[in-house]
Length: 633
Image (cartoon, rainbow, N blue to C red; front, side, top):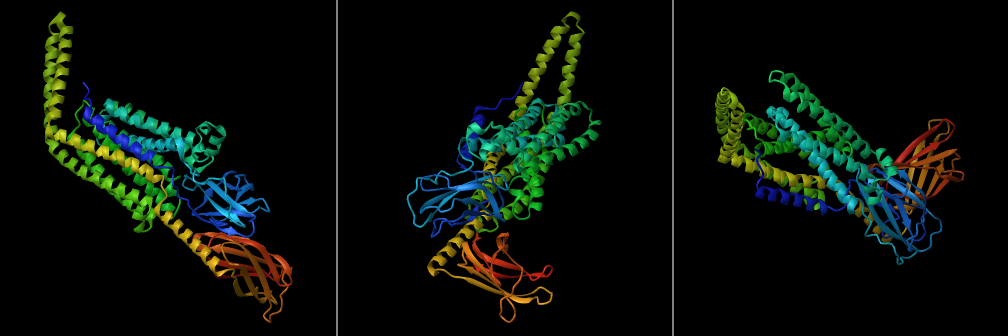
C-alpha cells in the first residue's frame, strides 16, 4: 500500500509552482552580462557632418551576426552597408552610406554576450537637425516573447532536473543504500535524468531563435541549429547531453547490479560508483560554469571551479532533501535513523560550502555594498539570501525532529524481525495442512498486507515522524521558490557590470556636455625620441582636434632638436584606454609634407585617459616608440 499525499499538501505544492511560474513570467527579457557603455555618434547627439560609420562599445566582448548592428533613416530604411566588424577591444562598428541627409537616425543592436545571453537595444542620433522618425525603439528587446518564456522555463527545469538527479543519487549512495531497491526513489532519480535531458534538448532547439529573431517558427531551423553548435553555449549543451549518456549508465548500475549485491559486496562497488558519479556530476555542473556568468569578468579561472562546487553543494542539499521527502511520504520501507542522521551531516557540509562559494560569487558579481540595493541583481540576491536563511532555519527544526525520531525508528526496526517470524510461522503452519496450503498462503499474504498497513498507520501517527515530514515538506517548498529566484538571477545583469555601465554613460554624457559648452578644443602632446642610430634624435608632436568622443583630426609633426622639420620614412600611432581594456587602436597617418603627417576622422569610442603611443622610424632598422597619456572626451 502506497502512502498518498493529502489534498492540503497538493494545494501547497500547486501554489508554490504557481509562484515560481509567476516569477519566471515576470522576469522579462534576459539582462545579460554585457552592457552598452558608449557609442559614436553618442545617444541623442546632433552632429554637423554625417558619419562614415557607427560604432558601439560594450562592457565585454560580444558575438556578432550579419544583422547585429543596423542604422535606420527617419523612414525606417536601412542605411548601413556591409557586415559589422570589430573596431578594437570591445568596440564594434558598421559602415553607413556616404552623404546621409539631415534627420534623426536610429541605431539598433542585438548581440550575444560572452556569458551566452542576448543583448538588444536601440538609440537615436541626428545629422544637421532632429526630425520626426517612424522607427520605434521601445520594442527592441532580446530574449522576450514566447520563445524567451520557454527558454526561461527550460533553464528552470534543467536546474531542477540536475538537482534531483545528482542529489537523489548522492542520497541513495551516501545515506540510504537500501533506497536503491525502493521504487519511488528509483522513479525520482530517473525522473531527474529525464527532466534534465528533455530540458537540455529544448534549450538547444530554442537557442538560435532565443538569441536571434525570437520567432517560434525558427525553433526548427536547421541552419540556426548549426550556428548554435559552433557557439560556446551550444558546445556546453552538447557536452551536457554526452555527460547525461554517462549518467544513464551510472543510474542503471546503481538501481540494477548495485541493488542486487550483498552488503559485503557493495563496498568496492560503492567506491567506484562514488568516484564515477562525482566526475559525471562535476562535468554536468561545469556545463553551466563554462558558458555563463562564471566564465567572464574578473577572476574567471577561479570563478568557474567555485561555481562547480556551488552547484554541487546546492544539488546535494536540495536534491537530497527531495529524496528524503520521497522516503518519508512515498516509501513503504521505513528509513533508518542512521540514514536521516547521515543526510543531516551531509546537508550541513553542503550549506557550509554553499555559503563560502556564495560569498565569493556575491563579491565578484556585485563589487560594492551599494549594488545590493541599487541594482536588480543585488535586490534579487538579497531575496535569495533571505530564502537560504529561511531554509537553514527550517533545516535546524528538522534536525531536532530527526533526533527525537531516532529512538522511535530504532524500536520499529527491532520489532520488524519479530513480526516477520510470526508471519513465517503462520505461513509454515498453513503449508502443513495439505490441500489448504494455497488458501493459507493467500490468508498469510492478506495478513502481511494488513500488518504492513497497520504498521504504516502507527508509524505515520508518531508525532515525531509527522513533525519531520512537515518540516521537510516546508524545506522543499522554500527550495522550489529559491530555485526560481536563482534561475532569474542567472539571467540578470550582474551588479558590478550595471554600475560600471552607469558610470561609463555618466562620464560620456558629462564629457559630451562639457564639449558642447566649451566648444572645440585640442590636445597637443610633445614627446622626445631617440631611435639609437646616427641622427636619430628628435621631437614628435601629436595634435587631436577637437579631442572628444567621436571623429577627430590628428596631425603629427616630427622635428629635429633645432626645430627644423625631420624627413623620416614612417610614423605610426596607437591609442589605448587601459582602464577599459580598449585598444591598441592602430592609426597609420598619411604624409602631407616633410615632417608632417595627418589622419582624418580618427574615432575615439569612449572618454577617458588615453595612452598615445607613437612609433617613429628614422631608417630601415632604427625605430622607437614613445608615449604619453592624455584626457580625451
